[in-house]
Length: 339
Image (cartoon, rainbow, N blue to C red; front, top):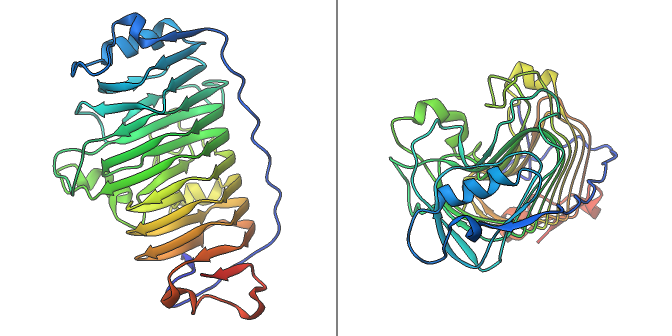
């Protein structure tokens, strides 16, 4: 059963100092090419999917750039050890696509076991606009899904206007560094595929960022060899009007309980107007959760459960006065700070 921290009624925690491995800096790729070389053109309101895909396919170990301006595309498949770099003034508009619910706007399913799928993936820059502006019956998708590899960095991006599933999902990956990313507006999905993604779309469980194991019951990440996520850092991100914030929630799944994630740091993030829970710390060994600012969460602030060991919490701030007054231990000896 879940233990809920920072709830409006009950506080409970198991807190022991853990050690978190530091995610290293991913080296820059040697070769750099713009998607414009392959026919993409900013602001022409034409579909740029083929041009972007051609650039990625032709440069599997290089850096592919997308310049400032508006580009329109459907699903983008990554190849090899890739850097996808956008200008901060780039806006990506989603061309709607019909895919399995586990597919995403940016996808890498190398289908190699363990962490052998890639040695580095870096995605940075731009605003990614899913084009959903309310609860949706027709459109639901993820932003990024990357499986089975090592050394992934996602940074300085904005994801907004999605429906139904996670904005970023990493499965069976180690050395994951997600930082300085804004996640805004995940709406509820009410379409005919609802029953297939029910665990993802209910407010409590649809995190903007989720990290999962390669287990058939919880993730698409083939091969399903039980590889877990290790060394995950999520820092300096903003979550605004999303179903849930960040984490791993499958404490009900026996296989997930048997194969916990290792070394997870969630720190210095801001959560506001969260429809479900801000942070899920479930089935995690060695975790840190500190210096996060949270307000206007409708369910929980921080939840733990399942197979958790060696978790440390500190200086997490609740800005809602009515909630915070119930959450402060005398002397703040557990590291909780009322707003």
